[in-house]
Length: 164
Image 1 (spheres, rainbow, N blue to C red):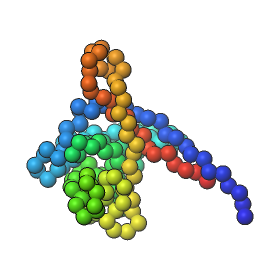
Image 2: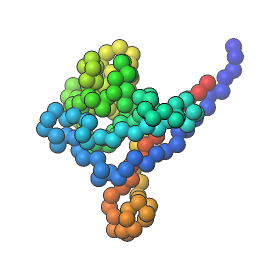
Image 3: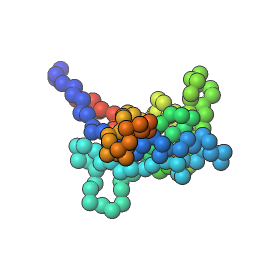
């Protein structure tokens, strides 16, 4: 048997805006559509797999960031089942999973659903990629040089991948 060594390749953190820039889409009484209240950003992979120089962003390089019921979420913008943009989907409450703050996202194309806290899909082996989120105190330059600023910066990164 061959020996192998596992290593974890950490992706860099990216600032995506201030927390106040993400309105809570649960306040939208129009079926919690994501598109108007989210941010979609292209963040190529640190290992250079992303296609740079193209004016159209590759869906696999996009992160979708939004707030639902007070929680910030950062997920891949492509459905793991059909590679359709999830920014066209809608968010809903998960009541049968036994979690107090259960929420999911439904892909607009085929109706597949994914849990926003675990990534687990409702059918098949497909799992939604969840990004790490970190709230940080703003630096003086991004807070408008106001020492009493209570807003926080939202930083995201792909979760570390274990490589063999």
